[in-house]
Length: 239
Image 1 (tube, rainbow, N blue to C red):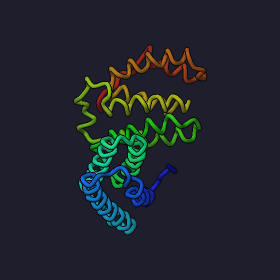
Image 2: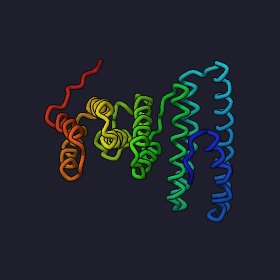
Image 3: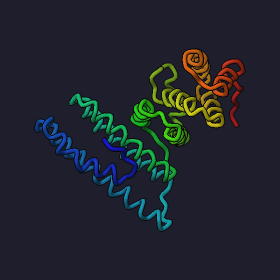
Image 4: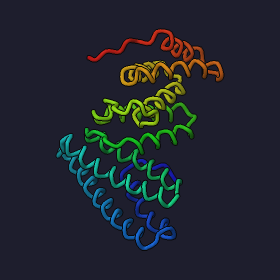
């Protein structure tokens, strides 16, 4: 699948989806899928109209952006669940990449993100295929935007005992990507926020990072920062 960047790209992708999936459907699945696709078309119509109005300074409120984005994500999650039931992991990955476009739309309109699991999965998949510093920098920037835009209920991290919760994976993966950029300023920002939101997980992250420094050939400046946070983690306080 080619890289999708815009709402129009996502809409074009969905136009081709019915033909691609037709061989996998029985009548029940077909009906459910058609209803979902109609709802997704309506979502794109609303989002596109809002984008057009925004160019003329007709802006929507944060609550409206959050609610519209939430509707889009719920539809996307239903489609992802359908791909799971049909055992089509490659289609699930494609839909998770679409979630990044939805996330950018919500962030652009100052909304909050209530469903970050597909976004986090898309980040992990993208990071595995990136080596160029420019791509890694762009990825960590989008990850940071998602951290900032995540709903307060997510930031409060009420599921702290679950190691696989999306909020934890977002910070851990962002820490890994930041380290791979070798950019000291970005590493410090990401590590400070990890300490703020996930102090216990950050401690183990830096411990594992020390082991990675030994196993992998990281530059001295990167080693120095990991060692600094491992030995003297900053005391993060609420402002």
